[in-house]
Length: 414
Image (tube, rainbow, N blue to C red; front, side, top):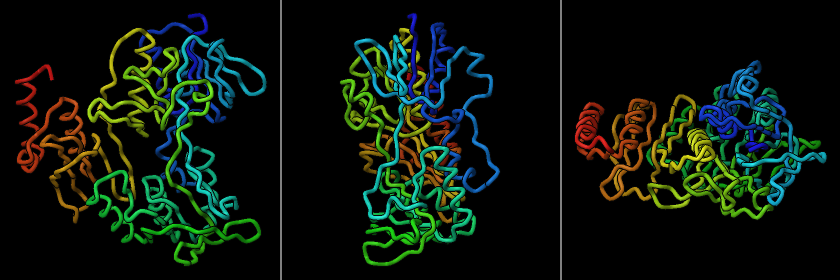
């Protein structure tokens, strides 16, 4: 393949795809293009350590010599305008073209816009990129009052970080609880109460009607009930939208992301999609999912490289996630959809507990707060296809380890 593989998107998925191609023995050209001018960086720290430390630097995904040392042509600050499938090339802003034999779309997602009077005022931001994090860090340095719209992971991570730094923080969530689409009510309630105890005000079942400004800068958020909340910084965190426009315009099938098969191939076989933008039929649940996590991006990138090298592996990675909110490390493994029974292990009063989710008598997911051992054991159990009984879970980690060992001895193929 004289034109090799072109990867669009230089985040976790795109960088891993480039690395995995070389690790799998691919010898053709590998071109990695990103629309940001910064070196590829880790995104999870942006909502925590980066915004609270004025001297913090972005954490690079790979070392300075990685790309040159692996003969990867990394091109930052590139905006792709069109995919020309008939010519197998990308049309680049400025008039250039980039040919490819195989194309990997790792275009990620962007913050969901919130149509709102005053949303265009200075001091109203979302967090997705390093530039966004820089803006939040700079703005928060002079802000005493911060309003965060959205009670998801990103919003709560930022809330905890800024409240710990002395800001008066209010989180506004339209649903009846925070993290409503992400984790079990018992853990969501624990996070809520602990944040409130740390000084964060949380308004659930509340929306914002408008943002008010003063000389072009945001000054307050007005709630649906008419309350006026002073704010020199407003952060919008109401979810994300997958970046499917390039694929869609090229005639590639989309639907809440770019639709892919179990080998990461889109409806056009020479075009693969991975990471936040990829929508696939999940091997365990049978439902269509689009997962926004570093683990999913990394594992899909590795499989995409193997697909290009001619392997026929099907995607069967067990999904896992994490979030650091104040003094709470949340770790999740598996997907909780369809859960009909839960077993709680540990003590919420000690800020250390786990929730084991079952569906039709089978363990499908584990959510943990400050119990990393439970999380790691859960990844081993779900990865092995093993489901401990609720009684074995209640017996604690030792009972589950023994049961897992017995299972693996009796069914090594699992």
